[in-house]
Length: 498
Image (cartoon, rainbow, N blue to C red; front, top):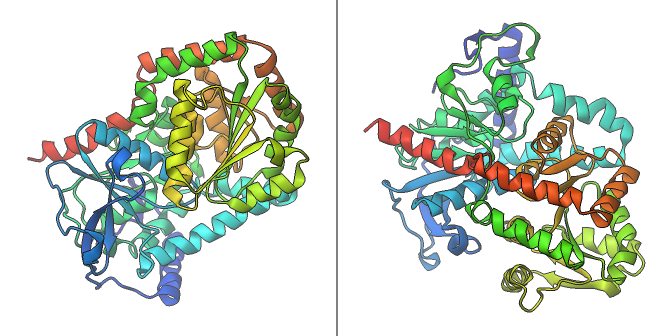
């Protein structure tokens, strides 16, 4: 196993930083054990939820279940591992974009969630850190002081430092065993850095590290893999490791380690950009109810902002001037709290709960104009399964007029967007990028500014029209082709070695 915590892209780490990294690994080993010598059997099985739509095969660890129609073989010619973790919804969504692109290109995406193997040290380490991140996210949404003094600085500067990457690399050594019996010559596209780091430590030969967000942070470095970024701003920041060791001028990343690809977007969304934008403007010009999609991910952070939006829109919903999709993901309690808090919401709402076939039917009819084509009222969506909870937003996105979201991974999607206040300082740069390429608003830093933007979308045509025009132009420029390019790069790394 290569030592990657002492020198990062030619930049030596101080002895105290390395010692801290070793201590971090030892802490997790003491708490969760060390399964470095474990020999986990690997099987594959079609994903029950997105297997048909995205071609996804799950990678399972442990004894095969004969009743589950599993296989011990991989398609070594057409297979590509999508390495991910569940930490909020963002990394899962990016993974779905990669899988969608891979399927459209004739490849077989194998879904490898390192946070799903509960019996492994890998998952125990990831889950512990995920729990801390979720807790911090929830507290930051409720405490301005915590957000200012702890959460914003951690997400903006703490994760930016090379010292953080040194510790992560040490911890990732404990994650490598999950790859032991995965064929080493199947390319890996990681949509979070830990699956990339673990794959490198495990000896996987062709690893692409698909970096999210638009704020360069050492958190996302996995030396030995090919790093891809969605924006030119991010490319420049990563190339020189900007600010990752205070004011020091660092050795840059080698040019062969970093590439700009564009946004990681599902094939279905990219392919239908022109027709979806045309339908948006048709609805607007015909005076149909304006459709707002509110997506509440993670642990239901920023619920009070969404509650204010819903309260503001209820009169327009009653008058047939607006309609709402509300996806609370797999957090049913968030919807229950909204219904309890907002007078009149229940009577206006149709609940699409835990019925994937019904959700797919609604999304198709809302898009095609059949059945539910003229959407009215409020439509609430909750799915217990994580795949359905995340992908529901992707299905609804095509038929909505405006997506209302924090500027996280959704900041890069080709749909008109209204950005509410961020969660973590790193997210601000997603809104900045979107506003600059014209497919989203500025980040609305408080509720009054959010409602002001809602009013502009409702009262005027220019804002929506401009965003739709820019989305079509951005597609022509290749800005939304990142997922295809990532898959191409991963397969090229393998083919170039033949």
